[in-house]
Image 1 (cartoon, rainbow, N blue to C red):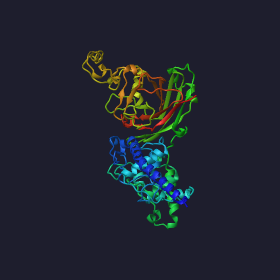
Image 2 (cartoon, rainbow, N blue to C red):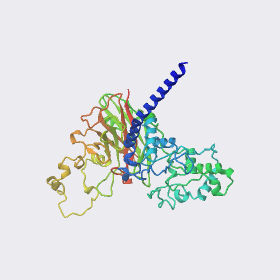
Image 3 (cartoon, rainbow, N blue to C red):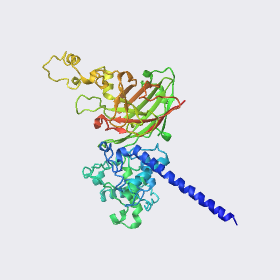
Image 4 (tube, one colour):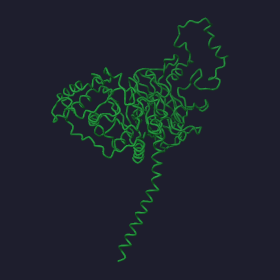
Length: 518
């Protein structure tokens, strides 16, 4: 007789405990969601998600206004909001060829927390979103490709993307997004697509459209083309296969992608010196693991907005060496005219081991950056000073060109040189500058006696190969230390002078992990 009331009392107490725990945990969860959003998203998307973050002016295309309800990448029907999985995939995978990086170093719980916060500030209720049902893929045939080509012209894909898919159609220069910003049509020949490049990814883009852009939904191709509804799937797959057939550029994935985002440095002979590592014929480089790292341009150009940089790492008991290799069809190494910009490359390390904001860290999580410059490399190679005469050799002068400007420069007060600014040095022994940063626009060069990173870059007519070398142990808290077994967050950047890259206009990666392993 007493068991029932006793059990009921237990249940009531248990429910009360659950409710209490839930109430106590909500503030902590909300705080965690907000903290993650501010750390990784607010710099571009803004604190309120309106796409007006402090770095938004550096980016093109502009960051998404998360409060607009318009999202490019969806697996749902036109007019429906993306699912949580869609948002998680976009954050985790990034959007190749745009400034939206991959945040695949965040765990599933962190990704879900960010999605929860985005939904909160965007007032997003996606509980009733209807997913697109992807039918079985129809295999490619010549007949299907011919059909796809005719559809491509009939629905006027060529007006934006061009006859050959290069994104150069007659309307390509006048397109704007939902906020009125210019937008570049996708270059199908590159093989790089927002939301993935598999056939089923393209099916979703065509059928669902891309909200916030001029890309409409073609979920009713049969109606648009006046065809029987029973042919809907055939028409859609025909268009997918034709667009895939336009790809002409091979993205070099010949080397493996870092598993779990980890790059392993190989160990080599303890007697090897910096000159050995900087010798590109050093046999150990041929045996070192090579990782292909995707990098995307922060500010879109008419040329390359997405490519791969190959990374290798070696170390011994005293030094660590990291080699970068990337395609570049022009050697840009002069800075003497205002219209000239140089090629460059950089490696950034998180000093405290935290994968904070990938754009050069933050005040709480500073970064140690090694910056190789092609112009410095040229001056080091040729043992020449920076001089306008290198470009304007035939200039006329009414002065004694043998002693001027050298003599006058030695006597004159030059603020940069006399303040010890490393960029004002007349000659260059090293092609690498070691800087620190606590976020964008905070780059600070270390003092000359702290410049310990060595480097060498070689251009072979098609690509750059650059090696960075430094001692494992640092001499400053502003630098990262390398210890065997440590896992150090690392990121990469490349500047292309022919694309007018400089400062924040560059191509960057997200965070990866460097491990020194036996």
